[in-house]
Amino acid sequence: MKIDLHVHTDASDGKESVETVFERASSLGLDAIAISDHDTTANWSKAAELAVQHSIGFVPAIEVTTRAHFVDGDARPAKFGVHMLAYLPDPTHQGLVERMKKTIEGRVIRLQEITETLAPVYGLTWDAVLEQVVGDATLGRPAVADALIAGGHFENRGQVFDAVWYKGSPHYVPNRAVPDTIEAIELIRSAGGVAVIAHPLSRVKDRDTLGDKPLRHFEQMIEAGLGGVEAYHREVEEQDRDWLLALAERHDLIVTGSSDYHGLAGKDNELGEYSTSLENLRRIAEQATGTAVVNLAI
Ligand code: AMP
Ligand code: FE
Ligand code: FE
Ligand code: ZN
Image (cartoon, rainbow, N blue to C red; front, top):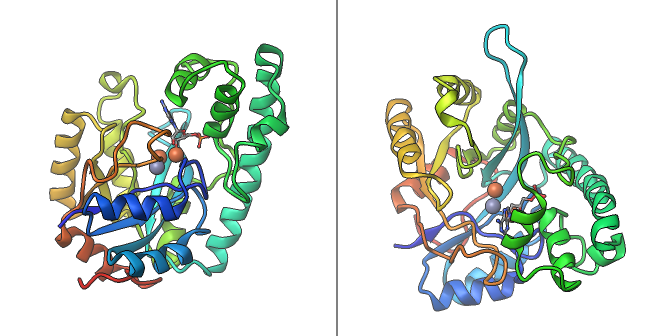
């Protein structure tokens, strides 16, 4: 069984349509994929149809953008972005729908701010960014990257991220209009979904100086209802993966593996490069009450 639980389409920052993604999943022999676009369920219904057409399973999901405000003793809260995968939530849950709407609106303003900082450097315009976006897709930095590539400044998204969004770059603006991580976990649960942290610890640069802060942060998330960890992902280093697997064992968490595919031209990540066992997908389905896995007997 090959199950890939983290896949993007052009409803957010993936380079391919949901049709193309399902064709590729089918030709690679995958048994099931999740569609987990950033802060949107826009392609779920098409995906459900395509799953039947291609005889593969579909797991409805969202990659929810959140921001942690981690309080540790009397220290100033540490703020950092955390991506939280929501599996099988009710897509009509009012609280979730309203919160995502706010995130999506915030993403537009934030991308406009980023574009303004890049205008003097590359002559970038907001129209050029919007040209790279299909319909109502949720907006992220990859749209800006695509506009800079179209303008002939770079060859691929990776080059843009390295050159433009290095640590301390004046061109970086955080996603501030997003839910707090703990609030997001609670919201996902109240929408009947299962919260699994995406590529955990992948963007932590100064891990060695943090002591047991990551442990305390994970314990807070687990207490709020975190259901699992995406331990197998190309951005999770081996030592972090081992740490996560031990944590999952102690707290009986679900363990997933996924590609985080963004299309062949989006990122190097290939569909199915990491996968999740049927047993772990079963646990997700058992804990969820929001919606069901499509076209897969589990
Ligand atoms: P944002 O949502 O605006 O913060 O942008 C983050 C998104 O950019 C992630 O979801 C990835 O899809 C993408 N991304 C981050 N780093 C890279 C990279 N080096 N190459 C290609 N895409 C990237
Ligand atoms: Fe992305
Ligand atoms: Fe992510
Ligand atoms: Zn992702």
